[in-house]
Structure formats: C-alpha cells, structure tokens
Length: 113
Image (cartoon, rainbow, N blue to C red; front, side, top):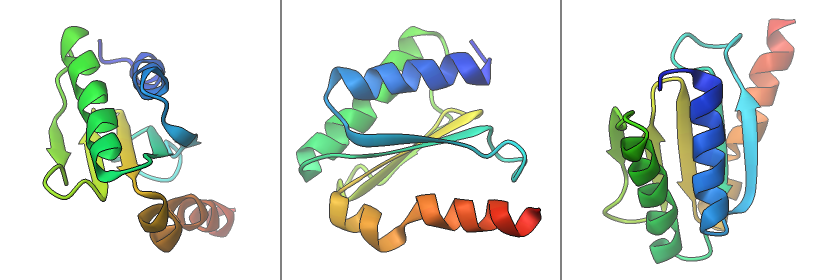
C-alpha cells in the first residue's frame, strides 16, 4: 500500500481508534515534494500521544507499509510518524498550540497564490 489517500485513511482510522483529539488533515501535496498529506492530532497525555503514534505505526506495518521513521517517542510531547505520502504529527495540546503547524502551512499556502 503506497497510495497516499489509502495511507491517509489508514492513519485517520488508527488515530480515531484510540480517540485522538481534534485531528486535522492538511493536503500539502502542492506545497512540498516531501509528502502529500500531514495529519496533526493531539493526545491527552504523554502516554496517550505515544499510544496514538504507536497505533499508526502498527496499523501501517499490518498494511505492509512500515513507517520510514518514527521520532519523538522518548518524551511523548510530539511524535512524528513518517509514512512517506503521509506524515502524522501527534502532540500534546500545549506543544500543538506553541508550534501551530496548521497556521504555518496555511500561511505558506496563501503566500504561494
């Protein structure tokens, strides 16, 4: 499974299974060559953040599409799961508010027009 849309659905379902908070999907395929979609979600605690990211990685492996990388599992403040066509960011709410990736990517999208 290398189709970005299928990976996106897989990641969204994996996050939903463990009750991710406020997941947002950003279509960034026109903005970067690195990935097609970014999914940003929050967890309620460090343990929840780690569990959400781990579930995404496990479900991707089951679909024969293991992550290219997983970063940040040691602290659980911000865990990134790189699935190639989809990059999943799972963060604590305070970390998510501080970095505000949704705004960062929307500003870049507006400046491209």
